[in-house]
Length: 317
Image 1 (cartoon, one colour):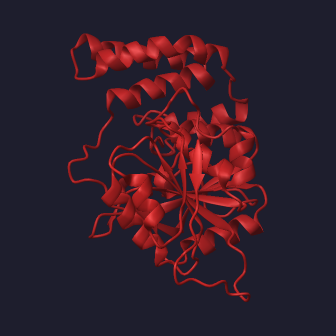
Image 2 (cartoon, one colour; image 1 turned 120 degrees about the vertical axis):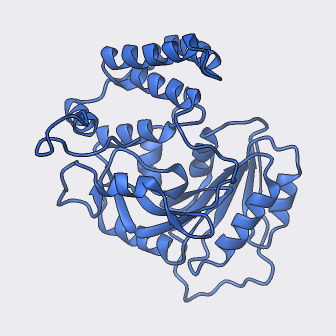
């Protein structure tokens, strides 16, 4: 892997400015114009964060274009498509205590990174802060905002915000040492629904994972992007079961994907084959969650048919 870093034209160091506390990490592949637009938005932030861009083997000149951008981003080129693991490469390369994740179509609102750094500074046990996400030019609330805000997990005196076991990857800030302690995103998942396993692992290790709507991230996905539970997401949910959850959960999720494949749903057969190939290494790396994390998951997964007085809320991703 190679890395490049260029000085920022026209920028001078201000001795009165405190050193950066948060690095922005971006993964991208063959989306040069998108990532350049994101860098334009990040360059406008008052925090002036350092930026690391992981180019997942683009063939459209992304790396050269990013190096030429005046923000002065550091470019990492692993030489292959690393998927979500590119974020881990960026976290390892970062030299700040905190890392904020963006995608090549998302960026942070002014002041959000400073607020996140203050929260993490003030709460040493806090491992991850999930932000409120606004979508598109109309700043529409992402549906996940309400899900996280209504988390049934009990509030903690140790942490701000709302305890959660899910977040959006392009709208989260992590404590670098906590992320690295638990291993970051799991290599078997590659990409898709990878956030849940990271939230589980951070919580199992004793780190706080919270939703804090005072932080805002902007997300401008392609108009053609199709929401929904794709077979790839189902594959990774089943893999998460084999890696961390009780066997009955893993078997149930595997059966769900197998049924989708039997019905001929597009992509389901391929996802099922991918799952079956990954089950043996998943079992070799299996690390069941502690009881208190399984209890928290049970609160999130309580059936919607439960009486209102007993039903705590909607399952987070």
